[in-house]
Length: 75
Image (cartoon, rainbow, N blue to C red; front, side, top):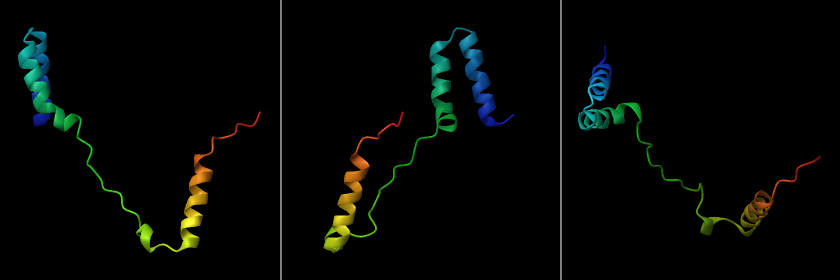
């Protein structure tokens, strides 16, 4: 058994015994191993907008406008 298996078994035993507080404490200690937090990420653009040419900005704008259009479903 892994340490996590032991902690989960202890949590279930506490729950079966009616010790909700003890089970909750054990669940809290198990949670990071069962439900890892998502890492934060910083998104950056390849080029700063101020460094783009007018043509590149117009292409981005056209793409954004096209992407913002609702999808048309064909029947």
